[in-house]
Image (cartoon, rainbow, N blue to C red; front, side):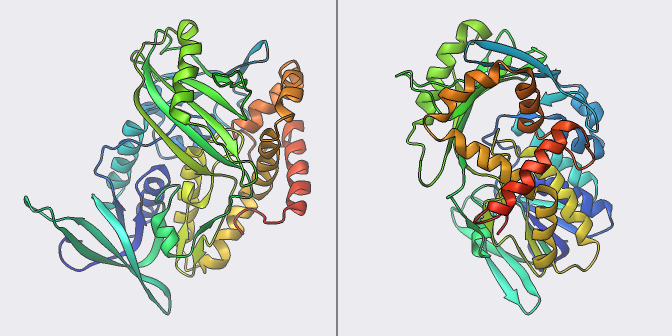
Length: 420
């Protein structure tokens, strides 16, 4: 493909985060011609907690990145704080790796993009998708805009024709909106912020979550705070709260993050400066519709593939990138196949997770049940499995059976099931 002339490709992937880069890498490895385009110039930052659960580690290992990950900080499990209790709960292993990690998204996304390129994909950055050209078979081309070459401040447009389109442009998904994607906020969604802080605990083998998150007036909030060690003398520190259309989160995230840091400074040896603070809204639990057409599909965060109980989406992004690449090899009608595949893999779990997360937005729920849960070994063991996205399709243990049973019951009650 020659940039500047007519561009045509088998698979066009828009968005080079974990989902898009995974899709591009897997599609290229399957022998397809792939072009990966992103609006940003890499390396670039992304609002995220940077944590990699064992499920994410498993997907990254499939891409051949185990040794690269081992060169970063490793985590043994979750350290949960709240309601007068602290519990250290190891990652359970089983069908997934028994370790986790954390890598700043500036580094992770840049590395994954390079893996896609090494796998055979071609890439363009600094080009934003602004329009689509539709035809009888679906999307025929995507129109991009980028800065003109030279010192001019003007913008230039170019078009990429494609047989298949993968939309992986993040939570706001501007290209998805052009194609009819809609986010439904009657179910739970997240409001989160993160920053980087110097810390004497940057090599801690446990990632910490504070489940009793309070504001400066001591009000208990429906969310949690986190401190994820990154090595090299710094941690990722952030806060996230839950909301629905009926109970919106009227919270200033960055001041809350500063207050949370002040509360944890002594325990974690935190420095005074909160660097690179950012925040974002997160569609969760498949609360989107219009995620596929005949020859196009939306994946990752753009498809609402985010765990409502913890805001984690990297693992789902990597998985959906692999799933869609497998479908691209054959001539499937994606409008029919893609929502069905996501529902089969995630529908039950997303339904019950967003129902439970919705309960946390009820003012009296968390004060009543939070202390009880933290005192129960059984409940907290379940919490690690469920909050960490650690129930796989292969699991048959009691925690997995309870989760699936609850998911089936929840799904049957949904007014709007995930991805519909």
